Length: 181
Image (cartoon, rainbow, N blue to C red; front, top):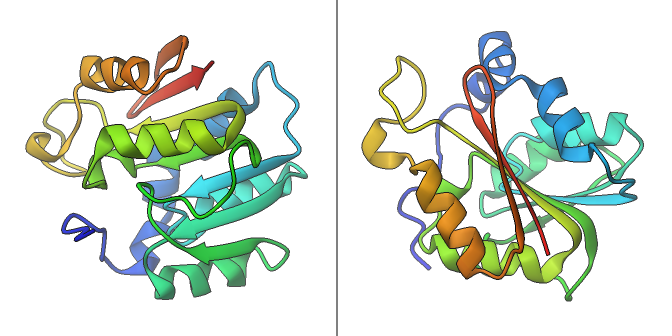
């Protein structure tokens, strides 16, 4: 896979206070965990480990996946007890039903094959897949609309991937999707 849209910006920017506030990290974690009692989580596209760290603070066993080795090293520095593996959303290197929760934070719009990424997330998820994305609108922060996904596109692809329960939760500056069988 080419991964031409891979995020390669400065790692420090990924953890800036402005960005973490924009992402509503604690609210996102609460919504990801709402109504389920996961033991472990796979953070696909873990980047600097911002969400992996937040999941670890909640007592979950955390595994992070990212194609960027530099990002994986950074994530390890913030979540020393976590497991961090090189890989892509379209080819998750774990057996079926390996994780209670699979989380993709600002990853889906970066994938080379969005449907395949959702199919892979479903394959390795036992309970839920949660996807955080930028809303489909022009904003000062984040990628231009041409690099964002429409909500209806995400929900349609989730159903094509086999999810029976598809929820869209608009946040202040993001959209969180929750998918279950």
